[in-house]
Image (cartoon, rainbow, N blue to C red):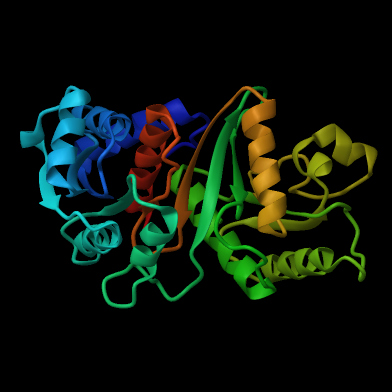
Length: 307
C-alpha cells in the first residue's frame, strides 16, 4: 500500500480494505448520543463497519431515530449501569465477537477501566498509548504525536513502547519506515535535561535494532524536527531532522500542548486512537465532531489489517 498522505485518503483506503476483507464490527460503550450514532451510521453505510451498541436501549433507540438510522441495522445490548457499559462492550472485543472497542458517552475513566480489566480487557503485555494524527495544511504527510493523552510521565522503557506502538500505527497507514523525532527543547544532549538523555538512548536503541521498522533521532527541537531549513541552519546532519513523521514527546504536558496548538493554531484535520492494546481502541471526546469520530473509525480499521 502506498503511503497515506491525507485523512480523506485514509477513509478511501479503509473502504477498499473492507471491500476485500469485509466489514469490521465495532463495540460501542454507552452509545446514547445522536452525533455519535450519525458517525457510526455513516461508517456503516460506507461499508466499513457493523456495530454492537451497549447502553440504555430506550435512550439508544431515541438516538438512532434522531440520527436518521434504523435500529434493526444494529445489535443492541441493554446495560443501564455506566461502569458495566465499558465492561460489556470490551468483552465483545476480547471474546472476538467484535473487532474494535469504541467510547460512547461514558466517562473516560470507566472506558479505560474496561480496556485494562484483567479478565475481559485488552491488555497486550506492553504499554498502551495514545496517538493523535494530524493532516496539517502545508505538509505533504500525516504527522503523528505520541503520547499526548494517556501516559503522563513515561520512563525510558515506556517511551520505547510508546514509540514502537506509534511506528506500528504509522506503518498501518502506509508509512513503510517512519521517521521518529524524540522531542526536547534543544537538539543537544544535556545531562541537566533528562528528556535529552532519554532521546539519545532511544536513538541508540533504534540504531541497534531494538526499535523496529523506523528511523529514530533525538534530541531534536520541534523546529528542526519538522522544518528542513531550520535543520540546515543548525547544521544538523540527520535522516530524520526536517522530515519527521512521528513526534515523540517527553511528557503528557508537552504532548497535550503541542497537539492542541496544531488543532487551534493551524488549518488541520485531527483524530486519535489508542494503540498497543490487543485490539484497536477508539477513545474520542464526547465533544468531538462526527467527522473526527469517522476518521478514528477508519484508522482503527486500518490497524486491524496491520496487527
